[in-house]
Each structure stands twice: as C-alpha cells, then as structure tokens.
Length: 166
Image 1: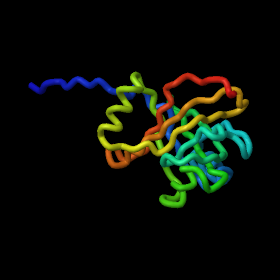
Image 2 (image 1 turned 90 degrees about the vertical axis):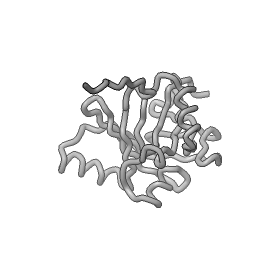
Image 3 (image 1 turned 45 degrees about the vertical axis):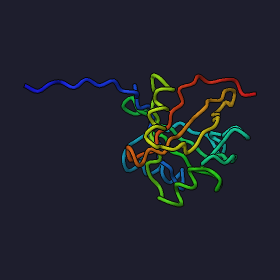
C-alpha cells in the first residue's frame, strides 16, 4: 500500500495569470471574438502606474506605466499588460520573448518563509515596487521573483495590504 504524502504549500491561491501583449486592443479582440473570453475591465493609457521613485527592475530604479485589462474566469483572473514605454520589465520581456505569459500572481501564507525559500534556492528578485490602479487612491507593494530556473516561470507576490498613496 502506498503512503500518502502530505504537503504544506507556501502558496494558498493562484490569483491571476499575466500575459504581456504588444497591442491591447488587438489582443482583446482575439480573446473575445475568437475564444469568447470576456468581459474585460480596463481603462485608458494610464490603467496602472508604478509610484515614481519606488520601482526597481534588476535592482535599478526606473519609472514606467502601461495599459492593463483584466478578465475574471473560473476563480482566476487573466491579466493583459501592454507596456507604454521601454523602461519596464514588461517591455524587456517583449523584446526577449515576444508576447506571452509573463508571470503568475500567488497569494501566500508566510511572506518571510516564502521569500527565504525562494532566495535560498538562488532565485533572484526581478522587480519590486509600489503599483496603483484607478482610482489611484491606494498603492500595493509588489515583488516579482525570477523563478524560471526553478519552476519555469516568474512569480509575483503582493501579500501586504494596500496603503494610501502619499
């Protein structure tokens, strides 16, 4: 008889999957018209903003913005991001890989324990900083870990509660 293995996952939920796109309008048309995926919640050019002076990509401070669209489906959100300049890790991803899955966003129980495990395994911080979405009254601290060597993907965590924009 086989022993049942017990798991104590650091990850309690996959919240969203992010796809980086070159042309938001064209991508949404394909998702809606070809695959029947929608409706999308989105705004205009400044759908999301990183708070100036708080954003680091590969340890270097940069500022950027982009377009964001979200569709909720099957208890997981699908997120599309179109970078609006060349400074972001999203633009870097497009240059290196083209359009496609950029990261998964996970909810975790213990941030310190999760980060220690990630770092101990040699995974690096790709991005960290505060992000705000409309109506731009709150900001949330996000961190992306480049776990492609370990898990084959980039993982975003944002376990801290939102705080007012200063």
